[in-house]
Image (cartoon, rainbow over all chains, first blue to last red; front, side):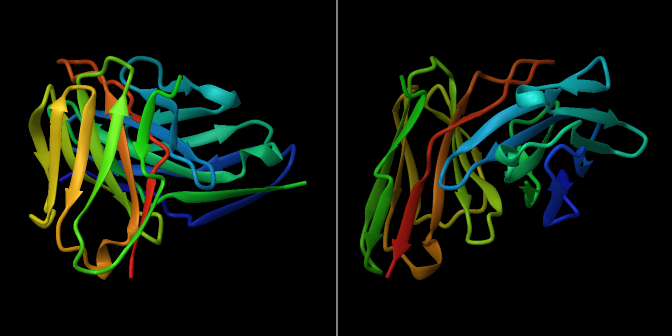
Length: 113
Length: 116
């Protein structure tokens, strides 16, 4: 069975500092990996995905994520955080044969001015 | 312009009632999903339909019955509502999975269901 772990319930960072939100996964074979963001009282919005190719994936709003196969990780990063980045972030994985997307438990990102 | 829409946005009802949540997508996608997000924000897939055919049915009580009249709509009907059904329900859609390709899912705004 596939699974996703987001080890931090909350990440606090000062505006202008770099941020990292961690994600590790478990899946049979090569994964498809995704990051989504959820603002309060809203649905999830797609940020970026890793399918194949370059391990560094760039997405919306200046976010990027690095796929590390040996560490089975897909950490989300941004060089300079904004207060408006404060939200709930979800990592998700899908195996290449199946249809089901499995989400991590979410990490709340708090960016303080 | 709304890509994935759900109605109602809020639903407050008594235990034992039957209720439905509607979902529509105007993206031309083939696949639609229902997710449940609990009070701890944990998100879990419930159902998935591709071109009106059920392809994912997780361990959901049979009080929950999805209905897909066409590939743009996936409604969720819940019978005999229980307190534990209180959650936010999200509809989503995506292009159909093709071999070697994966498409991101687009989510609706959610329906907050409160069972009293």
